[in-house]
Image 1: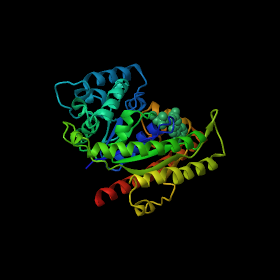
Image 2: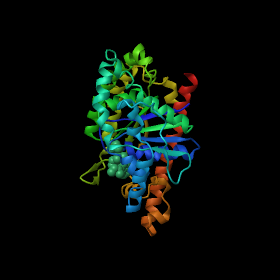
Image 3: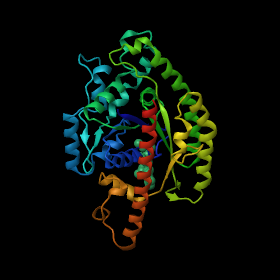
Length: 353
Ligand SMILES: Nc1ncnc2c1ncn2[C@@H]1O[C@H](COP(=O)(O)OP(=O)(O)O)[C@@H](O)[C@H]1O
Ligand SMILES: [Mg+2]
């Protein structure tokens, strides 16, 4: 059974895309079959995964879009009332790591936002809209079956629109990547309020007989929180500052006192001991991600995770090379440990559910 994991925070720049790519690759390198789903109309994940650097790359990507489906064309049968059913997307194998695939994003996916929003509000009264709330989930399930996937990682856009409401509420699990700064503290607070609203909606939608009987039925509401991922650094005007520890504590406090009560009220937590077995406490921090500064640009340029860049790709010498290889090793350990925790947390639930 596939585990659908959403990476959600309506604040941008908190490493959702970076984490999706590095975590997905790590899970695949541990023998899991993984589909990365780009649902952000900015398509950053697609650009990174498909290597968007040279003219040749552009021509190859254009060809992929002309010959393969993507998040938008995959959903078109439902959203554009086409006389055909949703079919699995023919995902693109990501070069360099077996078992890792991309379901490409589309800039125009945002065009479905308004229609889906209306369908989510009115589908109980308007029959023709009833197939939309379950459509995304149907597409992802069919695609996971076709590729025999163990994990789907959903890279989300920084928005609180109907698409994100749907993606999150129909996932099995979610992760909240966050930065150690004031805006992120505000974002967690805001997220708590939104989660409460969206959960009430999802409970109603999954119990609604019209949505259950639709061509694309709205799934059971089984979402569980896996934890937060905190960026273990803070950049102000391009410079890393030393004072991030207090902000990490503020983020953790906000999670404990604002987010967790909402998660408890809405039954979004796994049994407590599942987290404690993974060395997590009341702050639900899964890991802290180190700053790898310039390695990120190289990682994106080579469509390769930070920890898998070769010394040829780094193209550096002497102490600079040594320092960067140390950073790579730290990043590898961080993501390997994160992948192990995610495998443990998600499988514990599947067994007990
Ligand atoms: N660990 C890291 N070290 C240094 N830079 C990072 C790290 N993680 C992300 N970044 C940079 O921060 C920016 C935002 O990351 P991104 O993954 O695109 O965030 P999001 O998807 O949440 O908007 C990008 O420019 C990325 O290269
Ligand atoms: Mg992103």
